[in-house]
Amino acid sequence: MPDLGKYADAVLSAYAVSIVLLVAIVALSLWRGRKVRAEMENVERRSGRDG
Image (cartoon, rainbow, N blue to C red; front, side, top):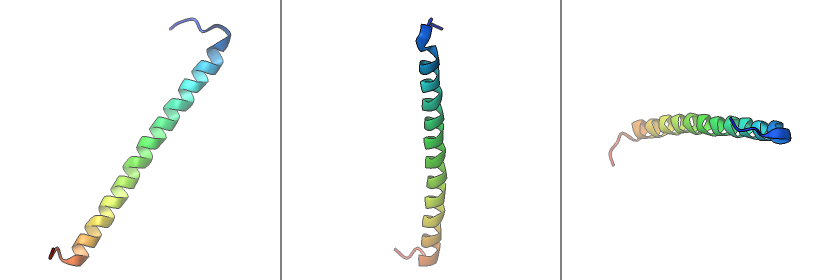
């Protein structure tokens, strides 16, 4: 790891916040995708898939 000197705290905390936000975005996207897929399957089931 490179020597960051007096900026180490700022740089490392920025990395930590970025990683947490990326994980949260991915998790929310997966959760929302599952929810939408379940809703779509429910609508298709109710419509009878007649086209």
